[in-house]
Image (cartoon, rainbow, N blue to C red; front, side):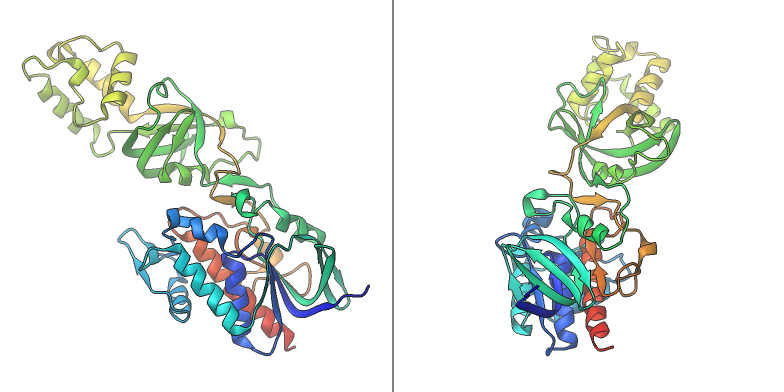
Length: 397
């Protein structure tokens, strides 16, 4: 095979971890050749969309946050942190982050090849043959940074898992995570677009498996919002579990304990002329309150006519709104990929494959499920930097 494109390191994927790997590799040794292959017309397209264009770049609660701050400061990006841990560029512009990464790659001499869709990879005695666009690259070291399957509009369609399998890796069952959840409930009618603060719990049978607190958004076919996205991580169809095994319970009175809110409502029953339909006024969204009150047949009365038992049933219902799960919204709207290459098949300190010599794996390809709030991008920066540095070190051996 006559291969004209011979380089030291090829990185497949121009997302967050791929760009970090390219920069770190060239920082280690300017004399090596590094080529980054990106299937789309430009690098960093998914990164530009993160955080609604503001770029939730990391989270200061991660152990590697300090390293990420140093990395970005060295290429001209200043980072600020919010009280909840989320970190952003000071400008809150994802475009600035992508621009800085591209400038660094160009300065260090990374060859960036866009509109190049890799179709297959092969291992031989010289290294790796990367095929695509009717041409091939021969690389001594290969870094897979393709991303997972979430957000296919940005080119992440799961091909990296195919490449990893062809090089000897196994891949766990994949699922969309950080996504809205499709549900069935008596309470979805007429609630589309309504947002409410509260807690949401994922149950497996009668067991509460996960609890999140935040803003819940009601959609035409289920639930959304950051806390729901985080809840989606826990829905796995394995070990005999099916969607019917799971359900969600919302507590829209999470700021109160049962006794406290009972006393509040009992006091409200003393307000002259107050209707039972308005007993939750300023406590629970009016549309939600109306549906629950109607469901319990408590509507059309004076609040003073409500018994203690009726008040208790109303409180219990608002603290335990049940939603049966029909499914996850899917890959097009999911923010991340659940599952991937297990930690036993690579060295997490170097991101070097234990199955294929000279191969390095980064980002969403590994089986590392991250919550909302910058954790997924921190994983990308961290694994990308480690892979780039290690690939360069391996070249010198």
